[in-house]
Image (cartoon, rainbow over all chains, first blue to last red):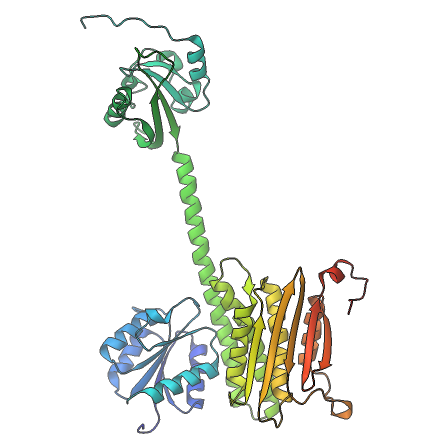
Length: 125
Length: 350
């Protein structure tokens, strides 16, 4: 279905959470890229065409938070799958682009890996 | 001036009531001259009482009471068209901050229909409003701070959970991996309370939601085949203090991990049931499985950290632990009796 491994972009301003998220994604068999803020994420998205899914934090420094980033991505790169994680437990999936998943932090690594697997296999990529 | 206005005398008692009113009060004639003012009015608005009687309202003090809207409202009140109820107006004086006033006015009803007189009550709400605003600001600040703290706690727990899982993935020894995963479960069990509290307004943790979340999370990470092993949660409407919920959650975590690890070595199907119910301060928590039952004799494993945690927490909650064969499987029951709690020297009744 895929030409090689699926590619997941991790966006989180905490280096240590990002490091673990990258490890989680690679252990699940995907290729992981990382960005520390929405602006860096957009630069990476502009520079390559093989990204399948973005896994982002919400509260981050820079011009956009994770929620704005998701809406921006949906507009510019509609096929990309989106997963959002935040320390604020009250974010509703309805505030996010259709089909996005939300996880309250601390998320369970297995739940994230499951969600990624499910979202990528349901895609038409 | 073609005619002198006729002279009227007010009852001394009426004047005395006005003067001694605790609420700043003015007693006015129909043409808005002051017949009497309360001492509280003179004090509050710094007007010499001696200068008041007979003077027009608009000439009081430095003329700051000459407010066109007030005058027209009083006129309407005097003619019986309107009544002033809690009308808000700013009192402006040179070199002073404006004061926010709440004004009430009505005609005096003393049976004398010929002469209209007005009672004008003036309340200075400036300080009260400022206090209310300050309180609103504080409440808002507190909410923002709480959100910030919750956000930080969640992020910190994420770091701990992520690092534990990363270590578990990297480590070579199966035993060490088990320990790291258990540590991760314990952290997630406490985090679930945090999540619930962040959305709760009453500071209590609803056990049904909490245990359900907890078991979903344990199942997601420990059960490879959801058709083979399942966890069912039955909890009444209990909501408990966060400290108690953390202890109960950790007990459930340990017992469920234990059952998932040991109760179903070769079974094709297995089920774990968590049950919690409370009444009148008594509560019972039980975790049962339909697995192989309790190991005995030389098969019995040495009590591990999990057992130690359950015992310590149960003691802390003043509960007794009972382990029984459920035939098939095993049941661990923690019971708390409020009566036994009241008289701790009596052994808990069975």
